[in-house]
Image (cartoon, rainbow, N blue to C red; front, side, top):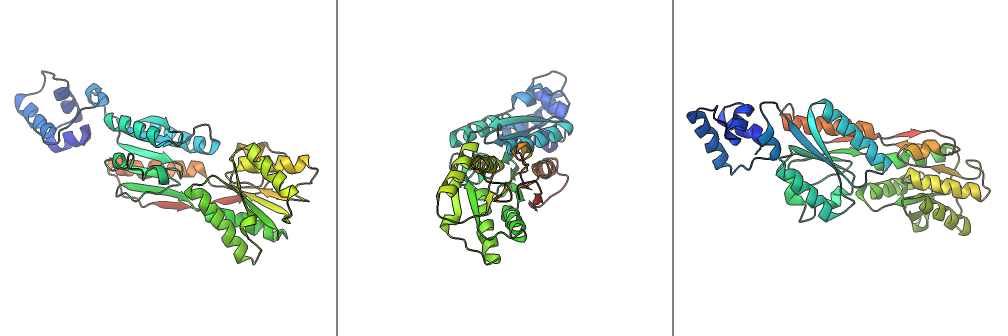
Length: 329
């Protein structure tokens, strides 16, 4: 229940509700009684925003993400914030740091401020959103997840088909004549597991060898990619190409191979994922998979605004990524 619902049920304007909440004398006794009856029936606690409103419609959404320093998340959040602002919404951006406590803290704060909806950016919220301290806070307002999903009645998703995206990378390498391909798995989110599964399935589809040794767990950093390149170069597993779950790890692996004197892509090919600034600042520029964060952000806004404004019921959506050719594969 928010100020819009109170006004609708009482059959009055939002500004009238605001005047009642602020104890203004310009409301008739009958109208005041009607509004107060609705407030009492729903045990309505006015937010600071509602108290300050004087007839100007204002809606608020909160955007939660794990780490705003991450370029991929930053691009998605930026698009969401700009589009909601263009539509006249107030937008609050929350940085949770992959913490259940921080996520619950922000959700409680936004609930108390009568937020009309939430956008959760990152597949890590598939896990955080199921926590007993977090899930109840997501049940009362519309929620849209960017590349995530939750089994909640009011939760919608804009997903990226990461299995398909990594499969595109493997298909491209096979078309270039590669057979000994390894995968660098970054993080342990639903998205990361989908990428790994896409690699395994694509290798099987082409009849190529794929054992546990062909999937390396690495840190999401340049150093993680460097360490993976060192491990591969010092190991006995044959390889001529590397697919990475994140561009930052691919950039580190590329640096490691070049430092070792290998030619890229002649001696070893490298493909990243995200089509981020990391890909474009490498030399040679990374071949990568574009998972379209700006498109994801725009569709999240469309889904959530439709739910909040009652302008339409949209289903959850899945986007197919695209391969972006660079000079490394």
